[in-house]
Length: 278
Image 1 (cartoon, rainbow, N blue to C red):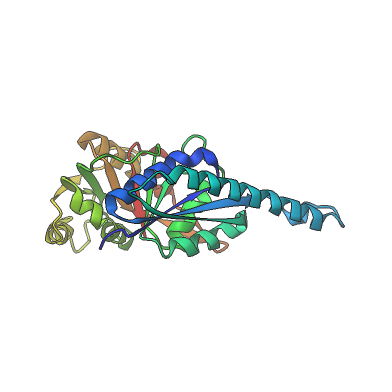
Image 2 (tube, rainbow, N blue to C red):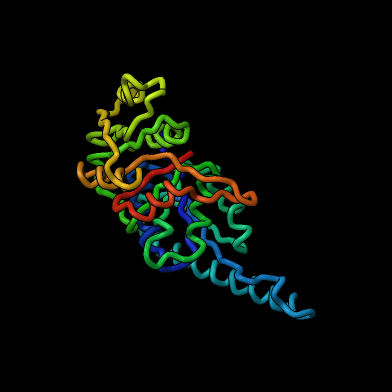
């Protein structure tokens, strides 16, 4: 498997560093970069006075469409000089409630979505909805960057292994990056005593990775930090990890996926990029 379609989603011209990071990764992976420029329609029909709704709705849609078109023009100007990059850009308009379906549809046919952490300073309010939609509606792995920078070389990757199907899905989706890394640590924190892997935590996973050409080793750690995410972040800093790979966890509320506590904590606190999938 290789990443052949990399997606990034923009709603504001201030997110150009995210575009640059996604483009850099697309060149490195010999992938096609797809850019979706979203204009957000902020109108809420239920709040308008009788008789004024249609006019105000149309004005809000026109404003969002103009925003999306300006952003698309800025993207085209930014990427035009890149002779070594294959790319395409589209624009669309959506209300906040329509973002999951639209983003999910585009992410479904991508191999990887690249986004800046929705909790990073200056991120637009819809950034969290976009990240959730790519993960849960689109079923696409998401590379979340804390500061819109892609490491020049993945020397060390930390794989968070808790024997869950979500973690395994993330690891399978991360294989192109894992194979390219100099070293991969399968990190097991307080492994479950009643699991089939009790006598050899991470052993079967490490064997699978080695057969894929990954230079993997195992670290079994006792949890000393308040949360698993704190422990993972501490370990990532300790070993100088350039990337963390982990499963994404959430729950359904009114048919919308909401990032679970561990996932949210990880994205809020991680100082290194995190690749998540489920």
